[in-house]
Image (cartoon, rainbow, N blue to C red; front, side, top):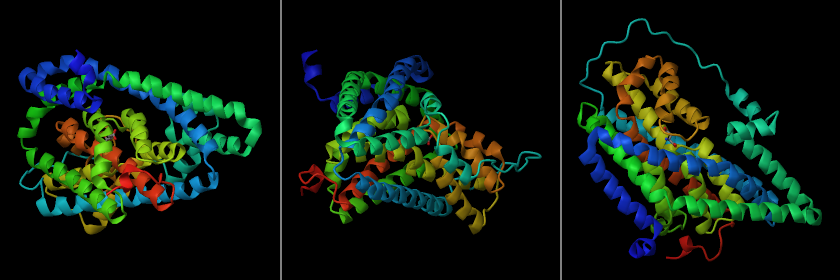
Length: 405
Ligand code: ASP
């Protein structure tokens, strides 16, 4: 027991991850019984999202010396989010075309599938960000609208100067309170992570050995290449990638096992702050990234579309492939970071290029196994872009560990 408490949290999680894999292999489908343990943990961390984002953003904004700077860094973060998502999509096209994981299958097209256009336009999404009722936005957990409300409040509070003193310390103390709650919840992380991994390996693992094996391999290869891309970006911008990944170990393990970037949000904010990004910027970047930036998912979705086309023996023209990358970037923007979201929304992409939605059924069996690395990359991308933008805007702490050689 004493040894256990002396072990660092990431080590404890790692220990249970290994145990989880073994349990999954031994228990097989019976590992399903362990899932509730993981589910409770995921619910607890999700519970903290609004409780933490709200006060942290308001007080973070209000305490920034120059709140206008967040405007600049905010735009930069958003633009880089979009760029990296497109890169992920293009990477998927290259891998999918070169390696052709779906070639060799010969599936007949389902009879009489219909093409229906998605009804929500980009403009609807933008207009919808402004909530008519802020309480409803909070109740529904609509992160983009919540971001809008709390940023607005933070700016206003910053401009109140002395009059806002009580409110400022209220939100600062509320942030502390949420951090305390989170730190207690994280004590359960080893058990939650272990249980979820046992479930993934036990229930979904064997399916990897089936005909979808090559598809899963190509997905993992693509996700690894995204990490290589991040490493190069950091090297070129004077950020120490080794220290970055070391600090990210907790969010990486939580996202890999829970398959939910939403559940990893609070831990990711913490890690990003630890790297020297000011609180307001870290909370803003990670929260926004949680909603609009999903490189891992964009890669997976584009690969899955190519896979489905190949399985049906269709070849997608270049224009359709470009459409896939575009749609993957748009679809991931409105996606919530919960397990399976990437596969559930795959239908939109399939329809956009005229493929049958039934194609989702082809990849469903290996969804969980592919969800793990893509969620992890979604989370790493949020943090990498936030750190990068903070650094290039001169907002990174001078003594940040990332700047040391
Ligand atoms: N599980 C992913 C996430 O939470 C979304 C997806 O299914 O791709 O980021």
